Length: 554
Image (cartoon, rainbow, N blue to C red; front, top):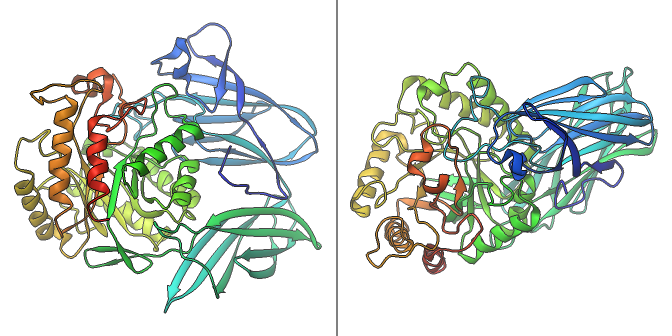
């Protein structure tokens, strides 16, 4: 399943889920592995870092053009079709596609070489406080497209004096060697518009539709109303292609220290969530995504931070449906200046941001774009990279505010750059100190260091606990101490008028890499700060969060 709704009524789509032939470099013999899936699920590759190749035969019923779509391959993919290189892509957490023109009818072979190794070639996937799995980890599909097809849709709603309007941008591509005259019809919420345009050979055209709506319901946390936006492309009066997006009428603005959704202030009560589950790694099926959603909403959460990378779009679809307010961020976590000076860093970050925004722009649940968690924002060189990435986001999407989570307390020189200031603080866990006193020091410093007049979010707070470990002395790593620390932190932050949101670190325990430093401070090679464990068994802290989230700032 690519999305939680049907995106095409005309275009034919064949999903590539199933068992693929597989060979791992350095291993003898052939394997069969599931797609989507992580190769760590196989007993021969439980912790293997290397390079493997997936192979699958596909049958093309009618000659024409194919569009291959991959929602996630971890972390580098080299795709070939009938032995010919088609596309290469880096980053496990962003989708990519490629068009193959003039494919003959019959059987063809698709090969994807996958690499999850660390080194200079990989500036963003490094030994880290989460695990970099290997494999085709998210869904894939092959689409049958005409010579001129709909590539993408961008929907931007506006609310003016209580009346909704929207700009809809439709991007049309012509892969043929001749110009094509096409008609494009856009339908949304009872409004229908049509335009005719000539698309040059091998060119892309952007068609813009300005639409006004008499009666539509706004998307909000309380009432997540969704609408289907359909674009239909016709040639000589005959419909030949279509694309359907699911959208919501929602605006995000800032009013001083408040975050406003549709003109109303919201307080974010959320979790940081890694895409990681004990038995399936990062290739999480819809059933387990839904379980995560149910648990987070049971705990009273209205928000989610996609730490530290763009999420599977099916989970974002769930957030749209459930009214969860999402902070989605690009992929870079805990990088010091030396790592940020990797020669591939700037380009790989730029690609990640572009692919994140281009593919996830239409999700009404996403209200914040984030970058560079806990990176070198205390240095002049790091500040330049923060500024460059914020500028890239603003050039692509001016409708959402930006932020980044800092742990460079009292040294960060980049707090003037984001729209929202966010900080990670583990009072009671890493620092045995008064939560209230430490918070006041932090917020006073933020205001003096460039954050005055901006919303402030506590982007991480929490403590570690091993599921099932109970201790009457309430020592560290016991479930009791974790619950105590989270309670003390929430009672301070959620009663501070300077704070406009809190995110618990974290929803569920997740695996970390053995390479590097992380294993030494992470029992079981897991980050154990989840309020549920890797199997989603709730710890005492889950009920503590539920109690506070459901009774404070309702």
